[in-house]
Image (cartoon, rainbow, N blue to C red; front, side, top):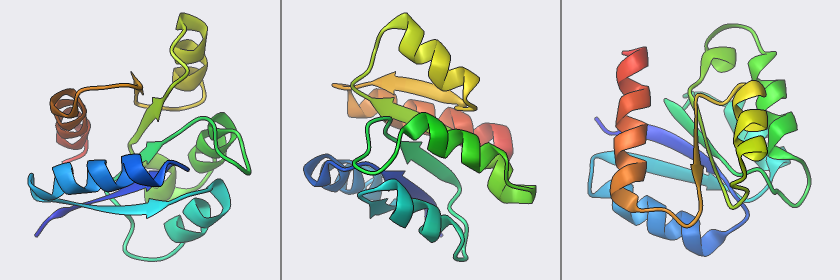
Length: 126
């Protein structure tokens, strides 16, 4: 059984590349291009095992999405969140972690590092 991951990011090309890479590593990526569809998807079972979240979405701020997620009860509120964004100042990273992200990566990135960070987050919740 493959690991289910949801990615909320408006960059379709990036999502396709991430999906292809993760598929080779027994992971399945679902993609939503905006916050509204991503939050709606999180309300439908099965819950993904990890969320990859961009900060700059067409309809919302990823920090708000993360805070909203963290306010949810049960497994949804505990879902591991990896922020993956072009915003890479120390202040951006601190804000992301304070909003509830479990990890933070800056674009551009190496796929091997993304996989390592995903694996580390998933180990914590097994």
